[in-house]
Length: 231
Ligand SMILES: NC(=O)c1ccc[n+]([C@@H]2O[C@H](COP(=O)([O-])OP(=O)(O)OC[C@H]3O[C@@H](n4cnc5c(N)ncnc54)[C@H](O)[C@@H]3O)[C@@H](O)[C@H]2O)c1
Image 1 (cartoon, protein in one colour):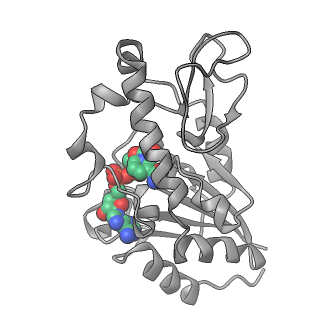
Image 2: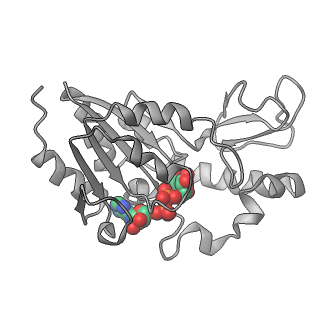
């Protein structure tokens, strides 16, 4: 079977009603990044940061996977499918995808704000993380998300996944967040590469990408029609 790697960003979940970051009305128009998504913001005001992510978590819990999430999950009947996602929502998993690699963490989990942040992740029961929630070492729990200015511990393993791609499908990402955006270069052996985005024409990808100027649900229907999965 062919190996399909899907590299997804915020636009993947737009049709599920979850705001992207950079489109009109997106999250960054409503909040200043330095107030809510940096280690400094946490050190200054952990309650504000916790509240921001509690609100995001509530929206994500209330959202449902969209048709594109389901199409990707169903592709597992036809190919080896691996997802590398910049999204912190869990909609790929809830659609049934079994190989989901979160580059920027998963909002449904927390981790220690102490020195051993990557040691263990704790599933959050419901939407609320609170000030009294502590890790076993006694540090306050913070959302399991990668903030601006932080390392991306899942990057190296993502490179290995991209290396394996026979087919690469990039969807719903402006390719402006680094180092995530650079990952597409590691699918150098892929025989077919697609980018699905209503603004695909304006995105910075090499010439060997097929640009699919559509929203995720329509884009996947289009690609599935085109792909031949015969081993
Ligand atoms: N759902 C989430 O978990 C979520 C939401 C917002 C932001 N983020 C985080 O913010 C960062 C933002 O970078 P990014 O590149 O992922 O997002 P981005 O906001 O920078 O770009 C979103 C892209 O999606 C496209 N888009 C909008 N609607 C679409 C649709 N219906 N179908 C397909 N594409 C659509 C836009 O044209 C744009 O190119 C990521 O690191 C991610 O971790 C995550």
